[in-house]
Image 1 (cartoon, helix red, strand yellow):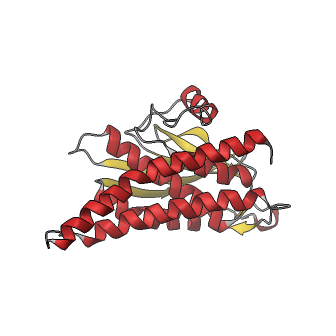
Image 2: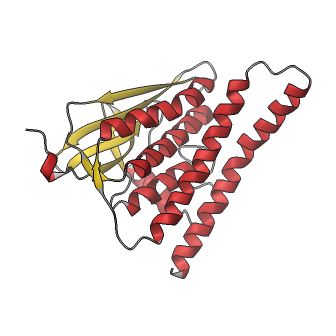
Length: 235
């Protein structure tokens, strides 16, 4: 592994550690309330803990793919991937007053990828959008997070969009380039480190694609273009 790659991984790990401080502190405080019998919603603790574990597991996926000799791709249903990611995000989104919406435009041929890694990538991306809505929205405003898949001339596009959040190509490019320079790499989008976005992008890079700014129904978001299986194209 090159020194620059090692430095990037070390910095991403630092971002994750910084990112997990707040949910772990929240769990500790809720546990203290439980000791005195004043905790009313145990589900919140489970939701926070589960997503924190998912972040760690997703980071480990980025480590594992660096040692692979080659990609082992298989036909994957992008509809199924986005459905599972939406399910993974639902409880945490509800806790933070966000709605999770799944919108799939038409039918899709399976894409050549790895299902577990795609699911992890879009779950982490959605987690970052939940945090961003929490940081930037008014308390009484429900944030909308849209998981969408649609076809383009280059393949199947899958991504996450929100009308409450705007992100430009320039700001996203600067954020990706600054991952080795600052802990808060997505200041335009979220007050946290934005670690979930960089985990998602790292996973997708290992699957021969990457996140880009995209637009869907007058909203901007982050999406990846995936290659359909030529043998399994819908007629």
